[in-house]
Amino acid sequence: MSFNNLDQLYRSVIMDHYKKPRNKGTIDDDGKLTVNMNNPTCGDRIDLHMKVEDGKITDAKFLGEGCSISIASASMMTEAIKGLTVEEALHMARIFSDMVLGKDYHAEGIDLGDIEALSGVTKFPARIKCATLPWKAMEKGFAQEKWNEED
Ligand code: ZN
Image (cartoon, rainbow, N blue to C red; front, side, top):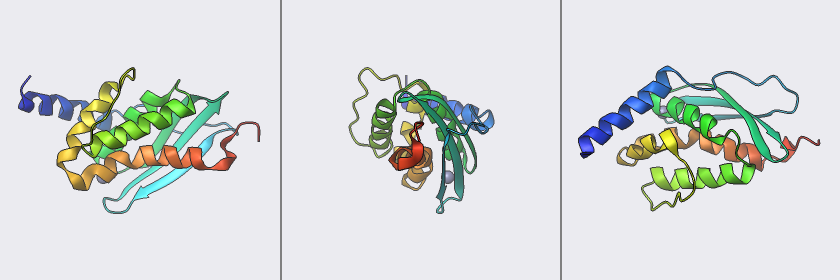
């Protein structure tokens, strides 16, 4: 596949997630973990909700507004992390960060699926923060101490 075709494929995957975001909404559950995060450079905003049970992410939803990259990234991320353990999700966040920064990334044994469509963001440094916003929100959420459902 030529680079041009790959670009087109990536663009259509991103636009599909932007126009039909997966997991848009909120989780109505006392045990949910909520994180708000903004990307002032672009005006992107995300409210991320996650539900963790026995160390596994059983649900993830988001509300937000912003550019196509930030919304598509949130849609892809919430799809990808459901069913993963917190550790696995944080590992995926590190892979994602390396990918969009144009570093070597090693995703052996991990199914990135649609997420790989955001690898083209490396060519647009101003948009990297848009792509990483939801992932940073997830990392911030798990860094907070009050997420444990036993609280
Ligand atoms: Zn943006």
